[in-house]
Length: 338
Image (cartoon, rainbow, N blue to C red; front, side):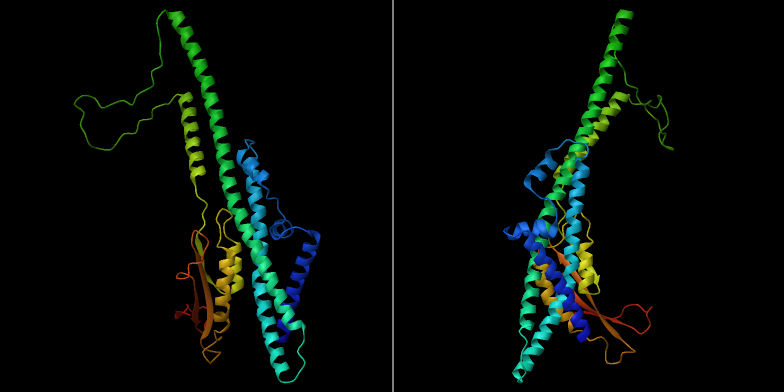
């Protein structure tokens, strides 16, 4: 147990050291810029976002998607630190409590014990702040992707409309030439679906009739479809509510949040941090078995749900104890919420 605690603390010390090195490189920047430059490592200026939203470059949608993917990759890295830091904090707090007890019994209390707890709390706070910045940038990037893709669709629609206009001009020229040649007016008559003859019997199997459509009209129809799709993209809200369920540990929960679709926002990291601080003691308090390690095992399952504003839905979110029989293939047994 002491060896595992030492390993977790050493790993957390490495994270703190890297964060301090990054902070030294951007000395003089405020906390938000530190989160953007040192932790996220992405460009997120208003000028860049404006360029993605107003661009008509065919690559704009690809660039917007790549920008979103960079943010999501940075966010996933930050989420991966959460279980490590939380486990290290729990180990450090245990060590500090033990040192305090020994000091009360007359032993000398090491000064590093409370200092390490404070350092881990500061690192968790910085990591949570960086996740909050990433979430805000992700929301903007999702909107930019939708806007860029809508712009691309509208550009394609304009191309189809221009092609339809060129075809219509050629059609009009040929009709004019035919009128001059024949000496009377001609106009195109679109084909009609043949109707049933007089006195035809109703009922029976339906008949399928293929009616050709002029190529120029097909182009116009395609352009209209693209414009409708572009309009829907511009009206589409950013998906910002959801849930991850049946996670076997806090680490699995963090991995599930990190694996969300790039076009969907996860919960507010500050709300998640608060919920984790309440859930972690419940998970730690679950006994591994019912007294007989060869019979029933008890395992935690964590489910986290969040609303559209990013807040945790505390009714739907829960820590559940699942009882598992001795046979690994046996179905899960009794569940109860704690």
